Image (cartoon, rainbow, N blue to C red; front, side):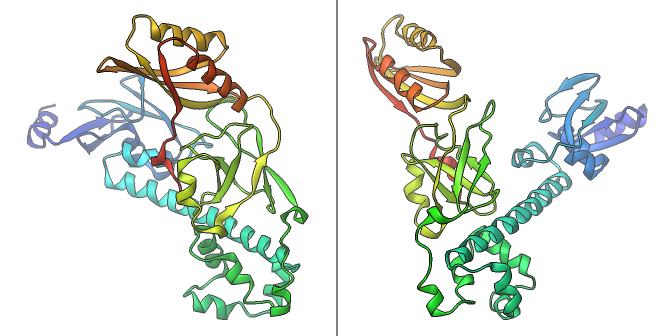
Length: 352
């Protein structure tokens, strides 16, 4: 006990924690249960789903203190996320998380790049597998400084290389003139997207088979509104609202734009942020909330502030589709004292 107290006095920038069996782990101050999990074993860290500190469940970002007894809970289905990088203090944990994320992104980029090239080959009425079987691929790989075909797929998936430039190296000028321009003749496939809550409507992506897609967080498109697809680097197809401010910035490369559409209208809930500008009157915010509730719309989050006689409310609502959003917006705009209702887009979440 004396030596333990002495260590704490000599090394005030460290915290000493214990496993349930009494093993001691030292960490820099600010370390979390996630650091503890990676200290035990890399796989324990990767599959960490929760922690008990001194017998109590705590969030994984909770700072550890001297003398804490830490238990880690794991699940084989758990995997690291990018948020974890900011939840750890030790370089060991941060390195392990980033390595897993980079490896996973490489796998996704490789799969995506292969699908993009195969789709491009179909435009010329040829099979990519046949092209590489009949032609030497080593020369192309050498030009790009690559050793394997999988590395080429990854570069296409990352957006570093255009799939068209690859395919056109293996076909004649005559074949180039016969390229299909009607995307409708290509095979259509459906890939389900999972939004914030509940099950999501499906998205139809033209010309792809089982291509990974997701709703862009910057605009959270709703069923019923026009959408556009953008092939990101290693993450699949980001589906944006056509009105999203980020679309103009992202669509500078036409090769990475892809046609998408809503496949069905199954019930689901999407988070939409509205900003309501009002006169600073007593009870006006209560009327806004009551109006939303009467339309059977759930408020997930609300924040308000008052400046120079005007009140601003920022609301995060659960919306099923564009029709419901328009109805809620019109109803709020019709209230006496409401000056403006605007849907907010988060331009910081643009994905390239």
